[in-house]
Image (cartoon, rainbow, N blue to C red; front, side, top):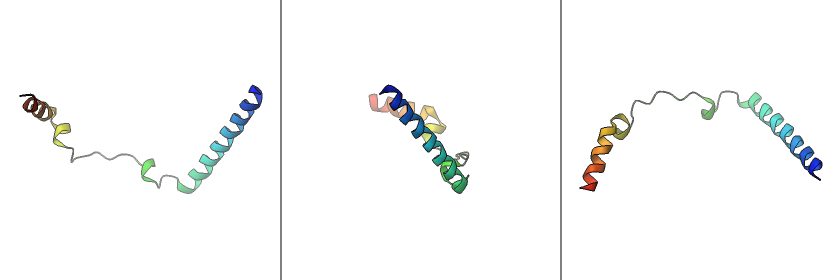
Length: 62
């Protein structure tokens, strides 16, 4: 039974890899998930300046 399950898993793995390869032939680099992430210039203030977030936390604690 264990060997049978292993065979099923291996077949499934091969089928999934074939599916992935076929999809790549059609979509290539055209999907947003496949593209590089650009540099973000409009970061929120708490990311640009961590002190801003600390000050906000201090004000809440007072």
